[in-house]
Amino acid sequence: GEDVEQSLFLSVREGDSSVINCTYTDSSSTYLYWYKQEPGAGLQLLTYIFSNMDMKQDQRLTVLLNKKDKHLSLRIADTQTGDSAIYFCAESPQGSARQLTFGSGTQLTVLP
Amino acid sequence: DTAVSQTPKYLVTQMGNDKSIKCEQNLGHDTMYWYKQDSKKFLKIMFSYNNKELIINETVPNRFSPKSPDKAHLNLHINSLELGDSAVYFCASSQARDEQYFGPGTRLTVT
Image (cartoon, rainbow over all chains, first blue to last red; front, side):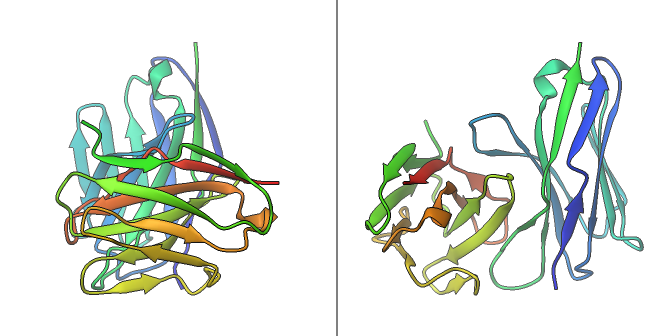
């Protein structure tokens, strides 16, 4: 079955790098996503990676995918207080409908 | 312009009542979704729907039913509300297999 796991909490100091990790079980996943949820708001798509890629960089965000270990990570460089939020990884299996399976979310707290 | 909107933002109601949450998207997407986020922030797909198929998560009670008057709307109707239905419900939309865009959520509280 599908299962996506994340650690629940991460605290970093402003200016440091943050690394949020995610593991998944569905080897048929075609896309893997990172979403950000700020307090009281909906989910905002940050970035995604196709399963045949190892890495994707987008400004301060770097996504690494280890398909063999089914491990996905999101690195945020120069973390700012505005980055404090819950970060969800999600996988999209093959199939006619894109039903995302989300991880439990990682609460990132950026300390001044 | 809001891409995916939901109404109401907050909904407080008593057990046993029937209620609906509305969702509209102005992105021209062909697929819409409903998710439930519980108190621990865990997100779970409830339904995905386009004009060809409705896919229902097998864990969703049949008290929940999606209703789509047209391609831009997917409403969620809930019968006989229970305490455990209290959660934040998110609507989302996508074009075919592209990324999903989420609405701001509806916080449902059942008393």
